[in-house]
Length: 407
Image (cartoon, rainbow, N blue to C red):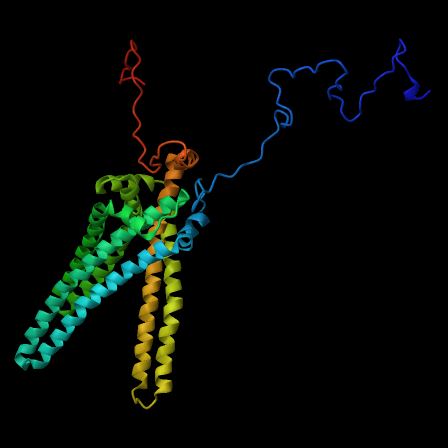
C-alpha cells in the first residue's frame, strides 16, 4: 500500500507534512479565520530573531566621513579640498600669494632705485653713510609686506577652516561666503599670527646679535659663538616643533568655536594629548610631500634655462640674457602657483586634524550625524560649538556628604 492510499482512522485522509518545512504553519482552512501571530514575534518578511544585521558604514555627506579618520584619509583629505572647491580655495591661496609678492615688489623696487641713484651721485666719503642709511630704511620698509602677509595669511587660515568644516557637512561655499565667515574671527587670528611671528623674529634677532657681538672680538670667540648658536638653534628647533604641534589647532578652535587666543591654546593642547606623534608625523609628512613636489616642478625649469643660455648664445651677444629673463619669469610664476597650493593644503590639513581629534575624543561625529539628519526639520544649530563643561551631579536631599578623609 502506498503512502497516498493510507488513511487515518475514521476514513479521513492524512495530511503529510512537508519534509523541508517541519515548523511551517499549516495552510489556512476554508471558512476558518487566520490566527494572529503571538505577541513579540517578528513581522512577516523580517529576518528571524537573533540574525545578525549587516554593517552600515557611517554617512559621508561631504568631504570627510563622519567617523574617526584613518591615517590615509587625514593625509589626502587636504588635497581633495582643492579638487572639491577649487575656485574658492585655490583662488584664496593665489590671492594671498599675490598680495605678498606685489607688496614686496611695490616696496623694494622704488626704494632700491632711489638708493642706487643716491649712491651714484654721492662722493666717496658719503657713499658709506648712504649705504648704511639704505640698510636701515630697507629693514623698516620690509615691515610693510610682512604686515600685509600676516593679514592675508590669517585670512587664509580662517577661510580654509570654514571650507573644511562646511564641506564635511556637504556644503559648498563660494569665494565671497568663505571670506565673509572668516572675517568674523579675523582679529583673534591676526593676534595669534602676530604672536608667532614676533616670537620667531625675537629668537632670530637674539642669535644674530650673539654672532655680531662675537665678531667684534677675536676669531676664536667668533668660532665659539657660531658653534653655540648652532647648538642653540637645534634646541630651539626641537622646542618649536613640540610647541608648534601642540598648538597647531589654535586657528581651527578660534574660527569654529569662537574662542579667544588663550582658550584656543588650552583647547589645542588638550586635544593633542595622546596624539602628539600622529599629529606631528602627519604635518611633517605633508610638508615633505609638498616640498618635494615644488622642487620637482620648479627646479627642472630653472635648470633648463641655465643650460640653454650658453648653448644658444655661446659668444654672449645678448640672447642669453633674454633666455635667463624668461626662465626667471616662468620660475616665479610656477613658484607662485605652487606656493598657493602649499598654503591651501597646509591650512586645510590643520582643520582636518582638528575635526578628527574631536571625533575621537569628544564624539563630534555623533553630533555631526545628528545635525545632518535633523537640519531640515529643526532650527539651524552649530555642530562645531565647544562642548559644555561637565557639571557635578546635584546633591540628593537628606544625603550626608562623604568624609573627604576617607575613600
